[in-house]
Length: 177
Image (cartoon, rainbow, N blue to C red; front, side, top):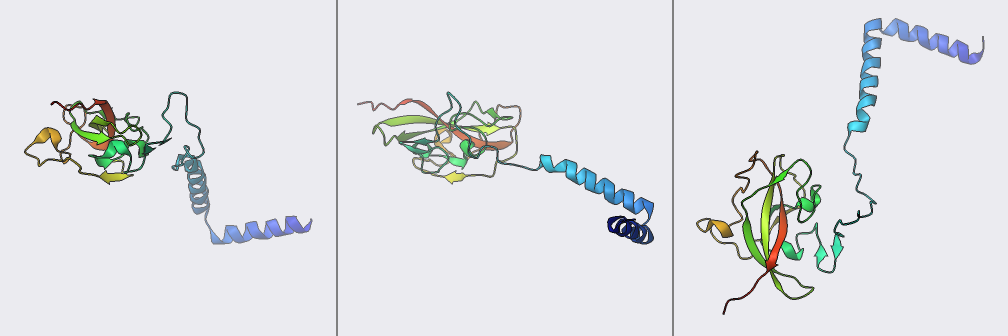
């Protein structure tokens, strides 16, 4: 026998003296199941990914769509959909956009115009927990509901569970004179 054979035989005998067949099988089963679960761990697949055709570039002259300072978020209160798998105007997969909304008027620094922004909650999954923003520019007390951002707007959807918020441009704000 070679040295490796002797060493393996000794190691196998010592293992047999210290453990039972059941504990050995339990350990091997645990290692196999644990190894099989590794691909299920969360992995950021977006790192280094190029934007797809038709997908908005997250870095624009107006700012980054996943930063609270982005111009569209002047009246937002919640988690940014763009940090949760969606974009600034589309909900993450597995959620649906609430049909009821609150609105705000924000100035786009690129063109200096005021835009009406509809803030829609994305509903159906638990809270995203990423990129929480609370900007209350133009927020009114709760008694003026359409201008308040402190209400769970997931009413009218299949699930009232809040996930994140999008900021959809409705149009250019015009001043009536």
